[in-house]
Length: 399
Ligand code: SF4
Image (cartoon, rainbow, N blue to C red; front, side, top):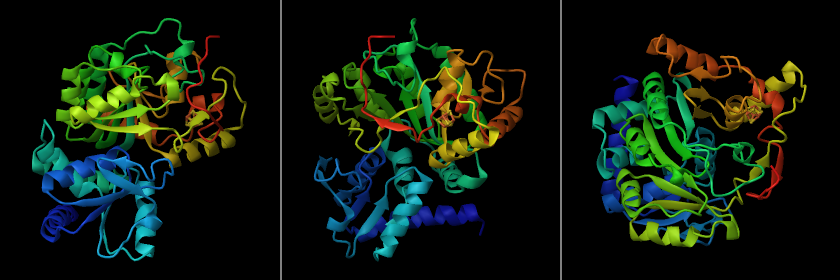
């Protein structure tokens, strides 16, 4: 039996086993992936007992009607655990922790996602195609898989955060990004890669973008995408029809909680509940903001130092950015190039997605080469992801 056949059998057996045993399930991870898993369990009529999460802010809260507990408060006897994360790194750590304390039944998120993408959402993917995509994700190391693909759709925003990772306040003439350029970039990029675990639609404030639905439909129809998340700052209420589309396509809203600044957060949550839209709130207790430092001064590190800091960033997350018809590995690199802080940034720090003179095969190789670079020019303009931790969303009028 080929390893793909074995993979398919495992997925089908896991689903049958879940349906047969009807054992109570604990969902490890209370963010968007956990919430997707809860929806799938509801669809399969399987009872979930609780969420389990390491984030102290989430603990003791109620998400989707379930309590969120720290692991040491969960009774593990005869329980099935589903590890709800897209991060291969976190998946390994959580699985090992659970095994070490004697949990027997541990499922990864793949079987759940198979049900989700083939039966629950508005644009269901054909089963064999979905299995093939999931197989690529499982074989992560040999394939071109992006863990988080960020697609910024606009530079317009309702806030002016001094340390905005997209450098929005530094742009005196913010615009919506061209819809056709985004759609063409998505087309070419998705042809050339094996898959994306999570597409993150961002901005600026993406709920201000007039063509959001078209972008989302394009992404949601791809079998190469496991989930879609929109990051919003809690200041904008979308149109009800748009909210219903989020629900139908299984898109989740990640609502940033910046205290008083996010003045429409509660109204948005209530609407999400009313229209059954997936949502979670990011309090930044866990994923805190980082000060990447001034973006326009070189640090003058040695090549070896830049290689070292870049490796740490990439080990932490395999991210990608689609901006202005180019694919970048890092938000900092994307915006420094886009805002021309580095004049005429060299190809090799990005891939031009709309160069129609090259074939998809050549594009694939360029993306692979970029994914394998030792460091980016932008690294020398950056304090790295491991820079100073700062309070989120401090506003500025200065710039
Ligand atoms: S060092 Fe900065 S520019 Fe380089 S990958 Fe890390 S965050 Fe991006």
